[in-house]
Amino acid sequence: MATSFSSLSWFLRGRGPIIRMEAMREFTDQSGEIWTAAVRERKGPDYKGRYYFWLEPRAGGEGMALFDLRWNSESTARRTLGTMSEVELRRRLRSALRRESVRARR
Image (cartoon, rainbow, N blue to C red):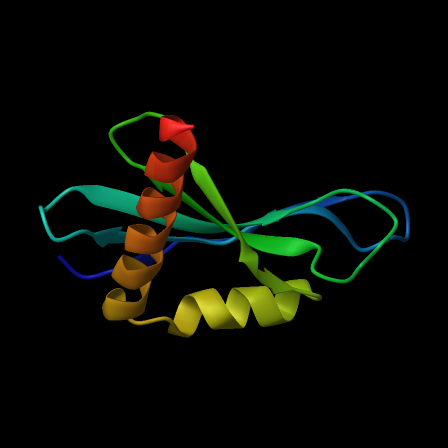
């Protein structure tokens, strides 16, 4: 299955830029399940690393954040997500799943 890229959701407040932005791509993992990769914004006064990588199964369930993959601007986050290959998306998913399994064992 080919990846797809959805439109962005923008929410504006006054003259300020974005409060929340979600850029999403769907991809399939090795077992054929469909996942959604997204960019989410962390609220707060610090702009550094405000946007982070988020993965969740399309079939439902809890999503996972990868906070080591962060961006300072929405345009960079959107461009990066839009140009990631399926191989890279699957690699990031495997990393997130390994981290979640380690947390669950603690």
